[in-house]
Length: 201
Image 1 (tube, rainbow, N blue to C red):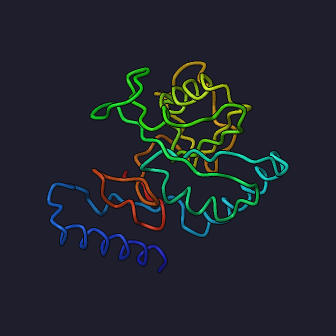
Image 2: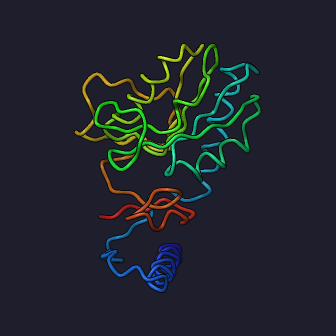
């Protein structure tokens, strides 16, 4: 019964997407499967935030959100955070942006931030190859912060992961090498608003 409910939920979302004029999505609904439901996500956020609060011991931090994928995760995350923080955002892309170039990645917004002697906590949606987070961390370190840590929603077990890459200090879920959507993760920029996380078989 629950399985059919989730299938109906996704079908309704896909129908709405089609209504908005998305004809090129090419998703076979029969290949969509629930991976993590919203209640699990919320519970894990609460547990992870408790650990982070303990680690920082009320030291002020700068929460640095990587757009766009982490926006829903970060919004839920900071609502649970007791540690005093300020919030900043940056955008990372392999194309189409003006900004700092590093490792085939363009980082936009970081150049304006004063992070000297500050504790920086990077928030991202998914750790895949590790290229994005690794290069963002290296650029932040040039600004002489007091510390740099990262928290990601999903840690993907994938052969694409760079060798000797530094893993995030905190992650909520470790997943297999699957294409995932929902809860901020997109398919061709759509379906970020799904409350749960799904994978496409």
